[in-house]
Amino acid sequence: MGLGIPAGEQRDRFKAIKKRLSELSITFQKNLNEEQGGLWFTPQELDGVPEDVTSGLKKGEKGTENEGKLWLTFKYPDLFPTQKYCKNAETRQKVFMANENKCNQNVKLFKEAIVLRDEAARILGYPDHATFRIEDKMAKTPKTVDNFLGDLRKRLAPGGLNEIEKLKELKKSETGDADRYFLWDHRFYDTLMLERDYQLDQNRIAEYFPLQTSIEGMLNIFEQLFGLVFVELKGKDRDAISETGKGEDIVWHPEVHVYSVWDDQSEGDGFVGYLYLDLHPRDGKYGHAANFNLQPGFITENATRRYPATALVCNFSKPTPKKPSLLKHDEVVTLFHELGHGIHDLVSKTIYSRFHGTSTVRDFVEAPSQMLENWCWTPSQIKSLSKHWSHLTPEYKQAWEASAKDGNQQPPESIPDDLIQSIVSTRHVNDALFNLRQLHFGIFDMTVHEASSHADIEKLDASTTYNSLRHEISKLDGPEALGNGYDWGNGQATFGHLIGGYDAGYYGYLSSQVYSTDMFYSVFKKDPMNGKEGRRYRHTVLEKGGSQDEMETLKEFLGREPSTEAFYKELGVA
Image: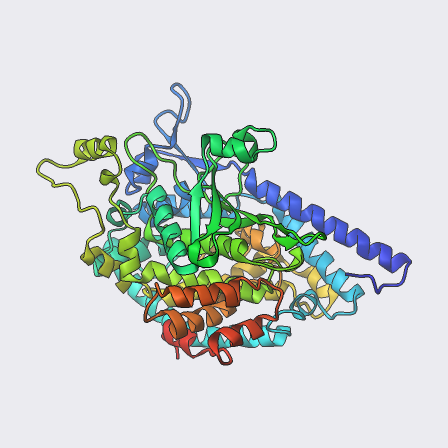
């Protein structure tokens, strides 16, 4: 990149920009990872938050102003249950506002990054950063992206307004007042609607999805579909593959699990690679859920294969002696999605490391994992992933009995059909609002990377743009509805995707759904566990990585050009 710029002042400037952008990315992400903010609340202010969350919160020291209070962090295991279950609207507002402003040192870094990206693109002869970034993607031009996002926005907007009206009715039945429906209302009333109207008891459902058995179930699905075998490495097995002979040297923390991955007999019994699982939060760790390539696979200069290693990094709550880590259904979907990236990473076979695994164009890379999410909505697979936590060990059974009401029978080992039905029936509840939220991210991304002039990007107020676009697109009220203007928060300062490689590419989360939905409906919907088709998918799509034009890969797998029909049908906006 930039090799065509003649030697001299302009080339030196371009090199300086690239170096500074790398520094900004590292600092921005470091600030997010090391963020340790939170708020003190009384137990009454956290009314409704599940006991398994509040019992794990740090308690204020005796004799201090925080005696009797609980410290709520902005880490996902604390944040999401509070947004979903806290009955106190004032608490939810405080948490929302503080979370939006938890990393304000990144505000200047974000602004500097978008200004420098624009300058670099213009040095290379592009009108803006988005044109430069999208040129080699499936979309090819920003106009294609803008048209796709604009069309989807038009299709989703009526449904979003209709969903808000229904949620307002629910809010009014609870509070007597629903003139406004706020950003900090949404997770709470969305959850309440699922519970009341669809009998979706998330906490009861979570009892059937202990983290470890859910992972085992997912790996079993991948074994059947793709012809793989996963072997967890412990003790002497770890020692055996460590260069030092010490197994602890092949992991970065004692909690990390390691699996060796192999082809099954039908695929030739060959070694595939290593899968690492880092599942629980800790200080300084990446705060979301993602899959990271540790080592790409490729063919060496002496014609031997270098095998890949990949890491799933998540932040699920830690188990306790009385209860294992339990997953809500949306967390099951997230885990399956990220493991899907890991499988893509592992089974890819390319000559060059540059094209290995998920090194595809950004507007395709999410499609394989998005397609696999469908298994989490298929009744037979939900059943196969489930196991009530009281059946895990005699100790857990005893703990369940101690917490159960007198006369309660031990729940069945697998999740009952009525709970499965309640999960499946809620897949598209308030779906328009969810996708309008994704549209907000995508349109904001394009807005800050598609300035008509460099002067415009220098003048742009990223915080006001982020918040005003959110209101315009989602129609959910923020503090601006209370007379505070649009400069009340800095959500872009916590938006790691736009600094971590998804700049002018976040639209890919939506556009790749076109491909993922088309693949699932066309090939897997009738029989999700069709091993023949699973192996064909492995070798036709996943194995290629980014070594072949992604449109060619799709046409080869589907036997035709991809279509938007299934995507719009699934969203209910065909």
